Image (tube, rainbow, N blue to C red; front, side):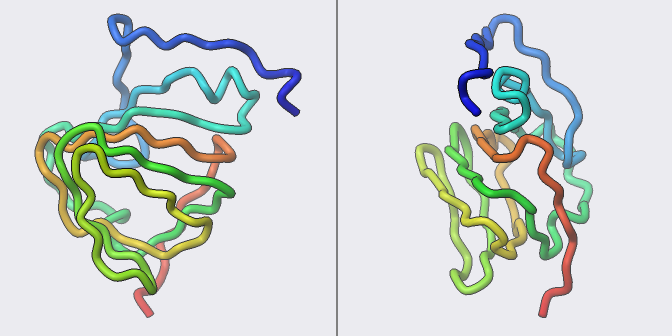
Length: 130
């Protein structure tokens, strides 16, 4: 698997921020998806000032094998099924186990994270709150 991976270097000075899963965030692809042939994706996610609600604030699940989040700036509150409400703040790290149902409750205007997920083309499914 890894023998086909390539070296990558994402320069902050050349960063491009784009739309992604959520309208209230901007996403910066760090080149890992292409370098690992889609085995992983690594991206920075930051709040963009929009506050409109979206589906991901409802209960949902990501269909993936691996997901970690490192908070770079700000804070957010998430509720995880069986784990309760967690406030994540600058410097905090989450290993979000595969298939855990969760929802975002709130986030700060300066919220920014590094997220790494496998596979790169994971699906997000909105689910019932039960």
